[in-house]
Image (tube, rainbow, N blue to C red):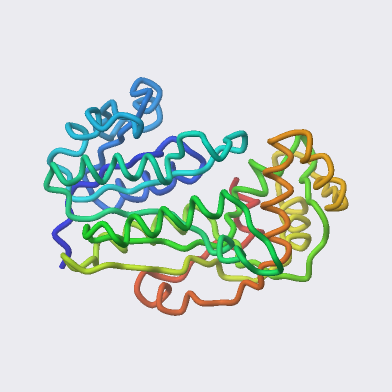
Length: 291
């Protein structure tokens, strides 16, 4: 049995951090939320212990990690970040590791991705994927036991990232099927991973949902079954997004991530995950109906 009883979460207030934090609480862990804005975090997680902490400041992380068995990281590269900026997934992780070595932390959990493996295919290179690959390298080289979750695309991205008012925005069409996963299912898998983690041993899991769908199929299903508003799917040629991205960092980010998602040949690899952590149950239809 795992000796993990207390789990700190960094990134709890984000789109994917919330379901993980709630799942950890529901699984019986004593959850501590480390947040730059503790007041806002307390409103979201009244049952959690909320403390101040910032990945840019090692001195703030040391007390925040005290008496914690594990920490879970829900981090991302901001869409307007530039290569020379501070990145939570590299600079922040370095600070976290420095702080962790001054505490009794037993394990670090981290949300990574599958699509970053498109780096180097078809001549594709994007510095953001370089950051994500470096994050994995830092954790695996740290000597601290880790649990890394390599996820497919989240259903929440369709509803909260790609949605603009009553439209779900796609860039280009692709025959590639993605195994969309709901944050709620993923959160339960993270909690289970911590429950079964063996002290001193690492974990690496592929995170994928129950049905393979192209982006167009997924977007249309979400629009069809979403009950709170009438949604439509709009597809813009990818070359237009790529040209516009030369002028705007935000659009440039979208051009790169959509190119990778359109082209990365994702295959199913979550057999062991489902065996160890449970099979996800939410389809796009079920997610849309309860969202």
